[in-house]
Image (cartoon, rainbow over all chains, first blue to last red; front, side, top):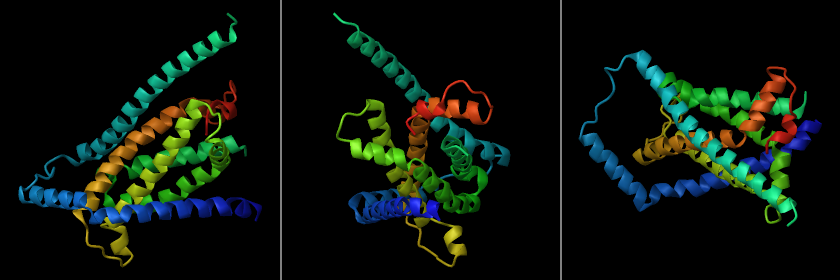
Length: 101
Length: 159
């Protein structure tokens, strides 16, 4: 009971925030930008885009996961490297600030 | 169970479900859509378990705050918006779950494109989110999964 009480308001806040974002997103479909994307999609459809139908199912199965781990992995690796550099320099700067004159 | 352990277990569950959900080419559309609905539960739990941190930083946002904490807060906020965007656009292009519930939508190519683009962007953003909390993840994993006690993960991350 206590847990429900504790998390009731945060849950409501999260759901209301989600609803606000949803309501902000939906009108995007009525913009010129959306019309442009629709027109592009029709042109691409007419061009007869090739489906990867002849790709072996095992390869298709693996490709989905590879793409996902590549996107997450590369972004994560770059961020982690930058973070370590930033942490290194901020630690150095703090040391300088602490050491008098 | 300690709150750090709870957070770690929920985060591991999120990661596994997210890995499956994010690869519809591998799992098929039906699994992708139904699992995406279930995925909302661990995501909300993740936010609830970190609610104290969210509130604490919200109240101190315009006061003195470490740069990394400020970045994490803003990044997580944008991540939340992106997560809702991917979910809403995904619901609007549903080919399996909604029709199975008797709701048939006319699929708009605009939302198809938006769903693909935002999902790819979300993957990049999650990668950055994981990197920002990597020290906490590793410390908590060592302590609660590998049962090695070296550092306290409660103080390591900004979660």
